[in-house]
Image 1: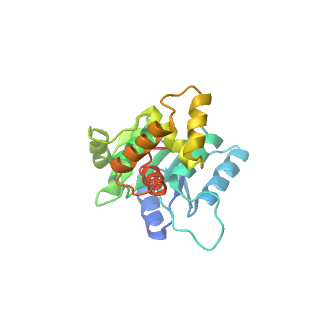
Image 2: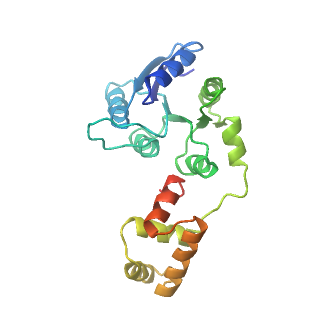
Image 3: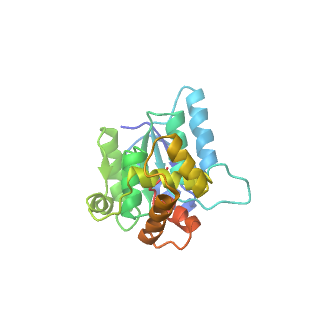
Length: 222
């Protein structure tokens, strides 16, 4: 069983509940961090001390204080933690239940478990910790149902490329030039405009800014 666990959760009552539940069935050292930046510092410090954390349990949203924060979301946090310590196990424990987001974390962030908060959240978290400790991927019933949904809108590689270029601030003329230089078709400005318009319709977005925000919130682009 895990001997050293770090919990990233911004609410004190949630932290206490998680710590209490985990301590009931393991003798692991359990540390907590209320902010993403603090979590990163603790991960690095543990590695430097030669006693790294084996498991990170993280929420996805964090309420920030008056201080400046470099990392503000669980998605960014997990991505950064994986860069620092690739072998650490990660369980997401959150109230976020959107199927597209759940699928994205398993596919893109390579997490080991996803548990939705709720009436049976803590008991499901214990099941997740047990499974992950045995190198088994775990999804709670809610997230498992989401993973099996077939009607989630998927983006084609070409559409993902367009969205990533929009995120980087490219104008449509610049996108066309980029596609030409990288031999990606279709690259005409008309084709690009039509595809972006279709994406706005698909995601019910009135502007490109709203489109980018929506797909980013759904975890469809990294």
